[in-house]
Length: 258
Image (cartoon, rainbow, N blue to C red):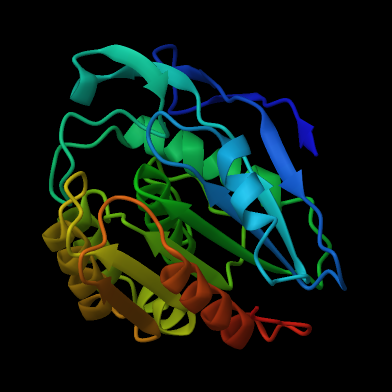
């Protein structure tokens, strides 16, 4: 199932940009609806490809929402336009970051979750740049606001990052450490990070350092899994672990692993 995307403004004043998000694909739960997770694709991809994979997972109680990022010029590709959650000139946890683009994407995700029933647990996951956006959303949740200061409205129960990194990690770490409420909320939010040691797109070291930064910032319920020989893609061993972790941390019923 799918529905078309929306536009969203970010920042303030006359210089703010408008981002046109692409089509969103929805995978309905096959069993009792207990959780909703927005899943974010990687650079240049779209929501359709991940919705097809997520539909095959043995998680009948999860509703998956798979949006498509805006098409925009990306500095990493010399300004060539492609789907991207934010602009990036390099992939690194301390690289200069497109905060306006990140905030717009995080707000779009929060908006998708905002209409879910009140008894449903909410989560965000993603791959590569989508994983980076998911981790950024986690910091917005525990700080209580986006980078532009606007209030973050969603109560998250789980974050999954595959082959990703934490954007502007040093700045976010400082902000978290200065917030008593942020440290308290960080301790309550489960995070599951996975990274292949053979990743030649988002280097393994970036994923590992991001996990260390998050852990030292107060995310006590964080698991980091590494996979020998795994490149910039996912494998059944990894998705099986994600299924087990989501079932345990969201208290899901009806889990079955083929």
